[in-house]
Amino acid sequence: MGAEDEGNQPPPQAEAAPVARPQPITPAQFLSWKQRKDAEEAARKAEAAQKREADIASGAVQMNGRELFKHEPWVFDNNIY
Image (cartoon, rainbow, N blue to C red; front, top):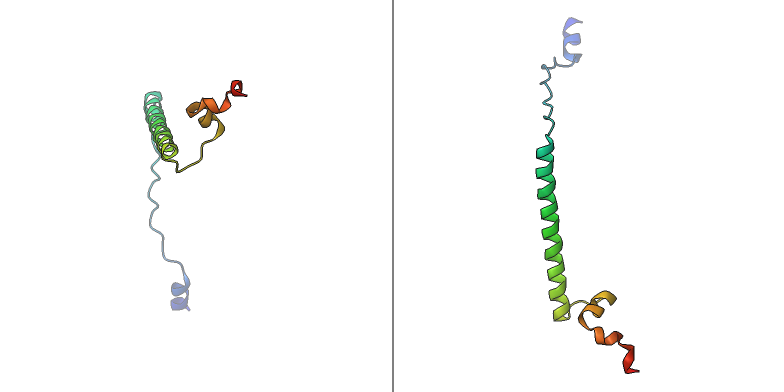
């Protein structure tokens, strides 16, 4: 009986390593991170806008109303009627 009981017992667990808690960030670190994220987002939006302008110029995509008014305002001139 003693040999059977030893085989059914779960292996002894090693001591759990202490969980490393991240240090709280300072307001300066947060502002630095926030400025970097905002700059990355602004760059991404500017790149997308530039690509859209290039696609419109090449005729690859259709213009929406605002873009049509910006590029070809004569279309909306009612004085010709």
